[in-house]
Image 1 (cartoon, rainbow, N blue to C red):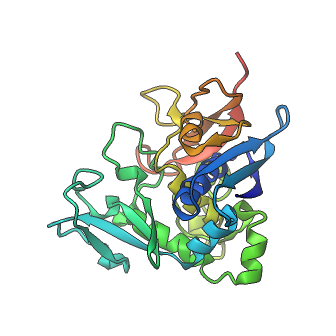
Image 2: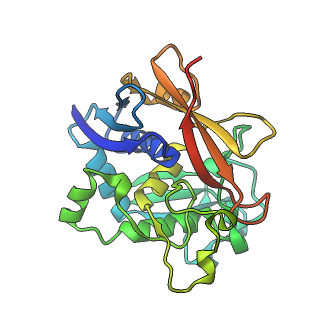
Length: 292
């Protein structure tokens, strides 16, 4: 049995989603796992504790997988959809069951992160269910989710052993210039009207992103979703955390705002439109909900 602990900001939704991403990845890479948010009172700073049945450190093993992984798009058998235009390999799904109806555009194709014989699916925006797809990016010019994953992987690919060991102590603060993302980490995003200007109009400004948060958050959405506060509103969500040591299946439900009888805290997440309404969304802020 191995255990690891990393710092997490509970008011950064992407980091909370990424903690579940560590659990989802660990289930595949290390075996059955449990996790808890070790917090005190109403403090937003916490530690996320992850424990697996196997001997491998689940945080280090997951990061090692990511720095060596390649992103691939998955297309239905017989489909002519391809992400070749974006230099992302497209695999044809041989099974008769595909995770969603055949999309209209390669931008919506599910993705797979693959390193040697191991792989982790990344397809929350195209799972074919009635759950909220939590898709914040708009896919400008049809840019695929698989390409966004590839771009984030490229930002961490050069990490050597020493840098990787340092990253394992605080992976959510590993930063790099990032031009596009899944928009899970609000530290990179902005609304031009609120900021007073658009960095896109200034060539000398580079936006700094957090690739491990982006990658792990999108993995974390594979089997869980934050809940919409109101069905008709696309700009307000709720998510939860618990300080109980929970197996992955229960941690998924708690993230969606279900307490299941475990001690938990709920947070409201507010989104905004950085560009045209109805297209891309970004996380503006989050705050804890009062205990009722």
